[in-house]
Length: 309
Image (tube, rainbow, N blue to C red):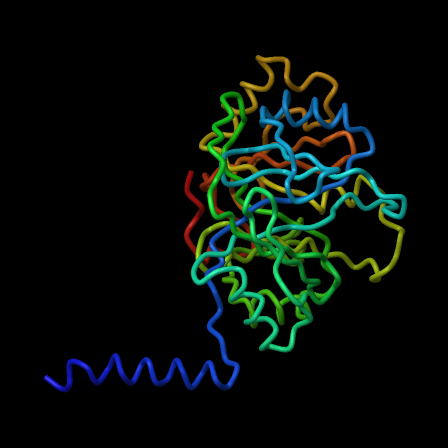
């Protein structure tokens, strides 16, 4: 009978000892919460996100000057006023959803690892709990978790799942020290415009199938040579589709691409997945992408399961 209680007691003792030494377990990172971008023309931006994408406009509890465009009840695009010092950049931050044991535990985990974190988490009016950090290249990353999800089901949205976000990365190894070594992101796929060159590196969150895509560049850090359009191509987000061809047909039939900068047709990407690109009024790229490849990917195989609808 004693053995039945020995393991729980040893586990408890280890947990108390670890706590006393300041050790923490990394909380679950379950997926993408949202991407936050800037807009120089709120009216045109609203038309793009509500009519073209079919998202539902909602207040932004995180920032009273912003607005949320709900893709579903768990994910959204946060649009903020363009700050005076933004230059060509239209990306503010990307945000990941935290599961057990919570956002405060993630803050403590990163602090214990020596990362610069705020003194406390923030609780927003909608009961969302969050905090922000900077990754090794200075990209703002938010960790967040709502206590209660909004009940939103946009009837005309072109897709209900943001399956990945991507942004400019200059030093892959440097970023890996944070996302892979510290946070436990899992390799998913890598490839490039040419088979012998790596331009994109994808890694999934450790406790889900959404992913972050490094958009590699040889541009020196701090350079302003890249155009606003080029930055918008790289700082992007992707909505998952069962069939990109059907989604494209829906957009065309409904006249939802009128006046929108977009590809002329769908195509198969280097990863073997159907895709279609369009751009919001500030040239942030929105990529529709099939959940699953229909052709063999170039450059590398997939090394983790695809996201699901």
